[in-house]
Length: 310
Image (cartoon, rainbow, N blue to C red; front, side, top):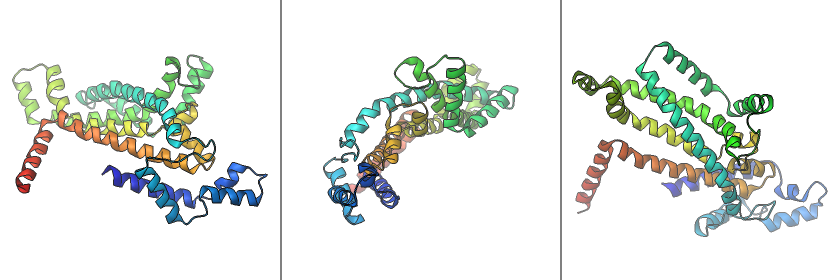
């Protein structure tokens, strides 16, 4: 399904950019350009062709030649620009997901074990606030408090461990709240099952019951939400990268939108769709390892298909 998804995404973004007001040729040449020079550049870039011709040419170049085109501004290949920005986005996504998993899952487990306690109420209140908090606003607050007032961390960049702290916290906090709520909900559903009562009746330690029986059976929704958050972040944390001046894929697409650099924006969106689809694929594969019943269903379905083919 990856190819149909990418074709659909390419069509939507191509249509939106085609209908967007503004002339890339005039933006590239500047306000002092003459109508003749603008017209010549539009013809050179193929902007005067009908929509279906431009879109067909774009699909041919992307899917048959692997060419995302060249940027209108720097004339560099779009693939090269994205690959140059990708390490920063990957680093931001990796450490943010590691942080929200290391904090969100244990906090959600503790909140489920102590349901309706004062600790559970405080955790749910904080999770609600964090979920409703805009990322760019949180990033600005972190810069104002920890960088401007206290001077503990740099306000921009992503090259040193100290500079990585604030962006990762800004990205991870709203997603961490979602992970906490999902972990709590999934654990509450599992710990009420009969096999958990049976394990307690047999005298097993509570820590073993929670770790070996409850958590393993509650992993599917947790893996799903973590995978989705990783896909979103890997696709480019646009607001966070802009606030902290991180030269990642998200910041690259923002610059492309400002300059009406259509190939750069289209390439960035296709990259985002591809990254999200690949992450979802790995999440589906992890399901089989997290829950042996899913793996058994796949095997039975495969056996039935082989039998029908025969």
